Length: 221
Ligand code: SF4
Image (cartoon, rainbow, N blue to C red; front, side):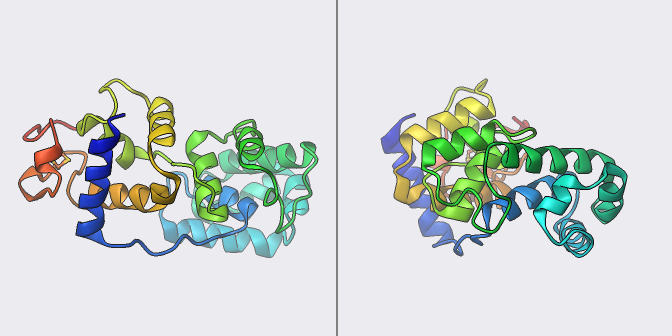
């Protein structure tokens, strides 16, 4: 990744959008559970399912030991209850089987690399979720690549057009200074939602236009 261009993009976005609000710093298990519950639903439904889950099963051990039908019922307000129940239970059991107690402090004291390896080894947890937990829960320097970041990285020529999300995450991870990871991640998402949208990006309003090799492109890549 071209670090000078990346730095210019980061500066331009910081000027346009300012300093993003701080991360929510939820305990890692909570962040992981919310990630599963947020799949294919709105934030409102995710939060409702989370509240229902905590009411029905107050501890994470109870969730890990719950029968799947009861678990699916508890989270049904978030949609895809049976599928998410399987994922949630497998994930929590995976953490427990790695020797970590399922409490508020779970995973918080592990070194970065060990935590990364533990997270990506869990069923249903990929590099994006692992990086979110490290960055948002624990302020560790990891760069999550969601759909917006992935799209912008390819349009801006920061990674090859055919780079997948995993390769894009590795490229950002290697190139972004640790202290800039959170703000750049947040500002790329903001730009991807507001201007460099998937279909018909608003290139004429874009603060990155002179840095973008794809200006004027109107496809959804
Ligand atoms: S110029 Fe267009 S394609 Fe390039 S980053 Fe801006 S909105 Fe996206």
